[in-house]
View 1: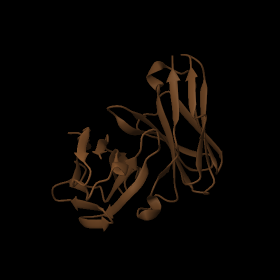
View 2 (view 1 turned 120 degrees about the vertical axis):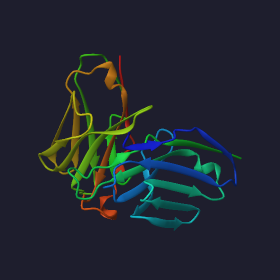
View 3 (view 1 turned 60 degrees about the vertical axis):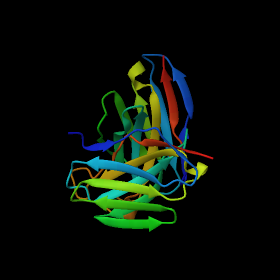
Length: 113
Length: 116
């Protein structure tokens, strides 16, 4: 079983749609859960950061973590063409042997006007 | 890009030649990382540094070496480049690895390397 799985898409939605992006993971030691956004030919930038289970909202973005199911989601409400990017989930194991980030492969999102 | 620059931004080289990529930060962060990003593989850690002259291997370190002689600079060297090292290379920095927001990694703009 892969440590992190993320559907690569591509995902194409009309402007204004609600977008759901998901990742599953197998390492129960992961404690910090992140979503990075990467525009074409740019470096990834941190979008959302959550610790443990629950929801976190920031404007049109909501990050959800379900540790019991080892499943995290990013919801984008009222999606805009400027949201078109690749979204990467990332995990880290605080206190682990290296504590380095483990990334999903990314989901490419296209929001059509 | 959080005070991170990478040079060169693009490079084409031939198999067997040495290549050095440079990452420079102005944030005085302790941790610096080198990743490669390839289709179908995502971001994979090559090496990282937790201080001047302190480095460690990541997931895909074979064929790469690193050096950090100053806080602000982290160099990635391909001693003898191969076509399998054609990739986009990203440098990242973080203030801490203690967990929490200070553990956030900030990425540079990337270097596109093509090995012919």
